[in-house]
Image 1: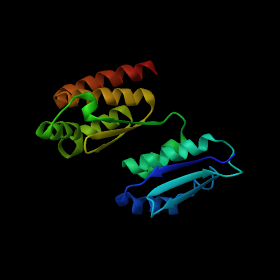
Image 2: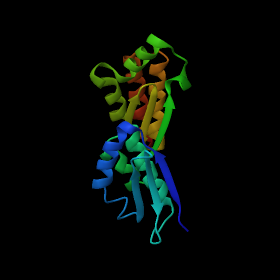
Image 3: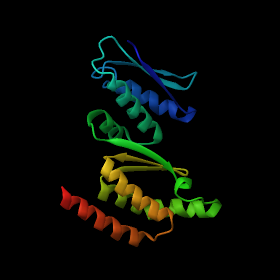
Image 4: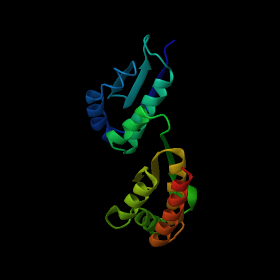
Length: 180
């Protein structure tokens, strides 16, 4: 039984996606899927083949392409293919708190920090990857680490100063490290 999935590709992302498709042998080779980028329709299409060993390979590769389209680097998105316990979540700043105009840009600025310092601190302490695109936030990592990062991001959106978020993040990650 053949299954297929199609992912919409924005016009500006079609060139980077085509480069990934031309260099990424893992999707076609090791996962035994057929992949095609339809430029005219702006769709990335993945199909199972007769020799596809596991139907879950289709979802894993779709997650990989979707993560790349959201803005994650290829090496980070490949973790979705290789590791079982890696997930990607998406949420909007408006899901946390409704902000308008200048307040929205201040919240995005608090998330990023000066020269990306806050974002990198959250990424490094929680072992996740974060992409902030307009008012949408994408997080890639293990489930427990995503929850810790999301809590830190939500507190920053709600107006907490960065040093307070750092200290809370340090305490939570120290407790999580003790558990394991």
